[in-house]
Picture 1 (tube, rainbow, N blue to C red):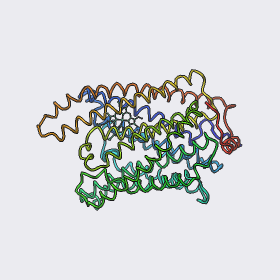
Picture 2: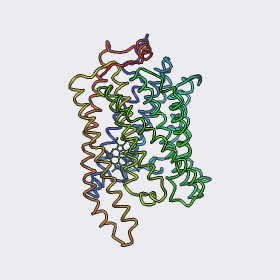
Picture 3: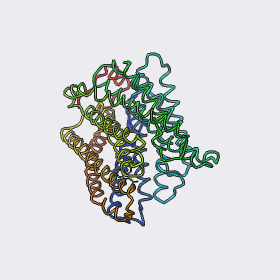
Picture 4: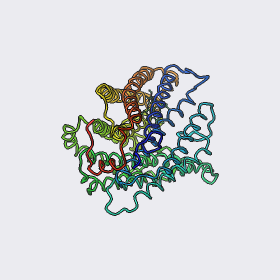
Length: 467
Ligand code: HEM
């Protein structure tokens, strides 16, 4: 049998590897943007904030999408014990990464034409739509039947369907029928973004459940009624909880009321996290030495903090203050770093090192990186929250304080944001580079390659080596 992971082959792992490079470039652009907060006009003639922001946001969003699809490719193959069609994965890979390179390149030379978050020319959305479609076809073909499937298979399937649906939706503005009426246009736009995050979360949470099963060596939780109840609550929220994105738009009241009520069902998820906390602490004692588990545990803490903030931001009276402030940025970055990135790193640590263990110095670097990212993320998040609260006070004040005075008041918090950003970049680098170094040295040692036969056996035993 051919080696499953072979030098030069495009596999699910390749998505995670390229994703890690995108994460690193996103961090560098983010840091440049934060420097521009404290030194207005820094690098303005080459890399102005108008370019840096989309370069940062697109790099990190592509890291998330690349990591999420890569992990589904690998874990679906492990679950079904069938090798994925490499031709399929290859086509999608080249289409995806060619689009990413063209998109980031176009930002660099100042070609835009899209909307916030997807600021590239809408023509480039066409290959990305094809990528989403190919991904959905791959997932459907691999699953074959839905009978007796664990909850993560449902999550991958619904995630893939909604990723395609919401991506198309976010580009509907190119048709005058949708963009003619500004309120409808903005409603669809913000709705699609909210739901798209829900869609990639489905893919990532599904993979994290698969990984938890692997770590614990038991699949009872992914077949349990609670898991399916949580899945349906998440799906319901994905479809209907986007109302807090459009509170400021003069659209129909009932849309806002329904989505506010739906947002509150997330309290159930929050309650479950608190309720399960003691069990989590018990598990953490057993598995804390396991790198992937440690990242999953950190993500659990961030799910709690982010959900708490999201629920507060869904209260219309509070949303009036937080809208357009750094509290929104804290919420978005807290979720994409603390939840998405941490879970994807847990998965990358599992997939990319499944047969290549870390050396002692690599382990030390990664341990330090783990603690540094967690501590700095908390500082990073708090500095944005304080800056947001001060801006909200200014927005609501009747004293006509000039914008420049308000920005001066925020400066110490922007400085804290920059310093914690440097720490975050250092912490992530201590994780990303040992993981990449490990996988590349592993690729170059043919004898360490894992065959599909061994791989299927290893997946069926559902035990993994402790790194
Ligand atoms: C894994 C790492 C990161 C992820 C996933 C991430 C994600 C994001 C996202 C999604 C946004 C858009 C926020 C919004 O519009 O609400 C954003 C904005 C931003 N991020 Fe990050 N970020 C990361 C790390 C960093 C770091 C280390 C810095 C540097 C200190 C940084 C600086 C910024 C800046 C300056 C903005 C623009 C905010 C604005 O528009 O005023 N990010 N980031």
